[in-house]
Image (cartoon, rainbow, N blue to C red; front, side, top):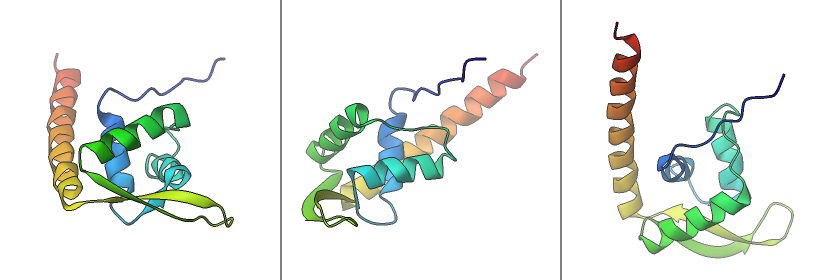
Length: 110
């Protein structure tokens, strides 16, 4: 039997990236690992999706980046939420919760 692939709905990647950085700065691989952790393995974000999202969110002013050293002593770009990013995380969270309730209601409808 083929394993079901969980695709991210459009817009949810931004929410998951912002949420993954809510506890503090992470480098790209750390963001990917945190998303996998907080979704209990349901979503595994590949670099081809993650890095464009990180750059897009940085251009929007929601993330700030700086160079640092990773756990394995390699140069890595670390991302952190800005104040605007914290506000956007709340907006995205509120939107997702509204959508989730609406979808749940639709699924329970007779």
